[in-house]
Image 1 (spheres, rainbow, N blue to C red):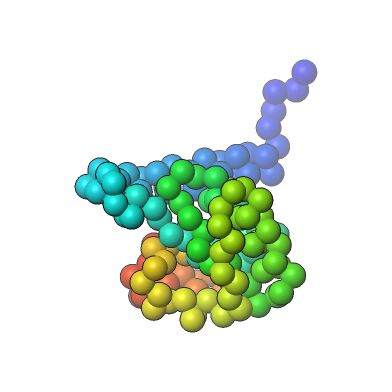
Image 2: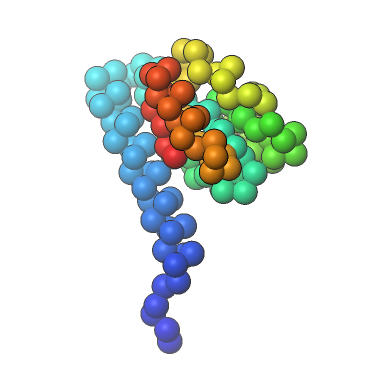
Amino acid sequence: MNDKIDRRTFLKTSSAAGVTLGLAQLASPLRAAHPKSAMNTVRVAAVGTNSRGNKLAGVFAQVPGVQITHVCDPDDEAMAKGIKTVESLGQKAPQGVKDFRTLLDNPDIDAFFIATPDHWHAPAAIMAMQAGKHVYL
């Protein structure tokens, strides 16, 4: 039996663990301060839901206390895929949006996860942080 783990499996596993731990740390101070308030939910916009983003939408949707409120992708098929993934995991259907910039000033969004093509990673993250949002990139 070969006990070695390949690079792809390691990255997938460690990414999923990192997302879960990061969201738990983000949500725990809010839950402790307001145990019965709406602040027990971290509202996330999923930006880029084609390949890796669709997988991340599924991971985030399974974390207790996380609600995917928006799925953002300029590609209608990718957006539909992301919405379907979130719904299939028991969450309310997120709103579909083509341009994430329309969400930056939305006070109902706490965080963005960004899984866009490489050339959009930094600009999207910078804009989201300037808008006061938490970012997973």
